[in-house]
Length: 157
Length: 168
Image (tube, rainbow over all chains, first blue to last red; front, top):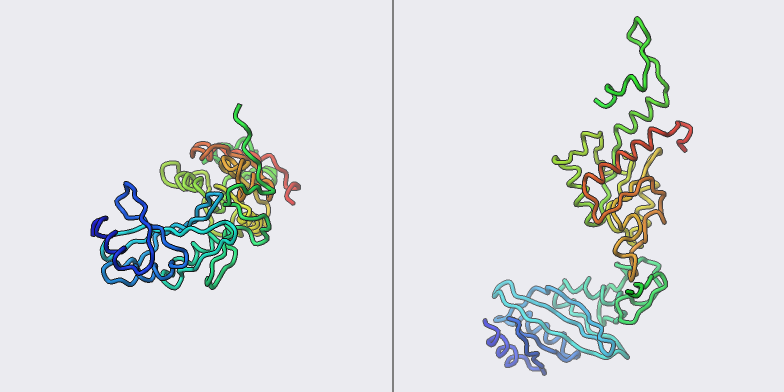
């Protein structure tokens, strides 16, 4: 399917609310409501004309006002892919795990939990694996984080 | 060949027989310096350069340097690449598992002192000399194979100046 067909198909067949980000890229880009995340993931994974069975990437963005979790998924069968993201605020940072849809989300979500301090609801195994086991210095990937051992870059003269 | 060429320096031939006299220290340190087996321990991009040095174009083997996959069989550990805080206990443990006498070569800027990760990094150890004692530093990002070869020859030089009493 082309980009326009893919956009129309997903918008027509998904029951929840979707916002489309217009861009130059050859793939569609959606904003999904945070409460619809698992439902939307299940839909694009199982729908017989989409079959987005491969989670390519999952990462978090800290904009200092809100968190965004960005998902890149593609289909081996149909050779198409989409991007979508969910947005939630800083005050209570948590989102639902999609580990039941894509098993590959396991380590990505652990990484987000560990480095951003975002709680992942429903993840079965939230343990440290990138930072040292005795780490107690906050969440290094958050904007504005200042660690104990970090030597800041000197000002350019 | 190196041993045969330098034989007059290290040994003295007794006239009239197939006997040479030399010092035990010289024999030991020379043979040790001429067969440094190194622990293959690459943690980042410097390991690619280490592999190139071990391959046929630069040919580590002609110096008697053969990689071992076990710390218990190696004399030298070449720390090739970035060592993070999480990796630091592993480096320490590998070093502790090596039999003495043992030597450490820090390869590349990261292993020498943090390199490009010195500033603004939450995870990188700023030099492996914070964890294990280093004999020879080879700077560069990454160092060329010639530089690494030179560093290994410097390790050999250091070994040959040692006394057997220094082994501890």
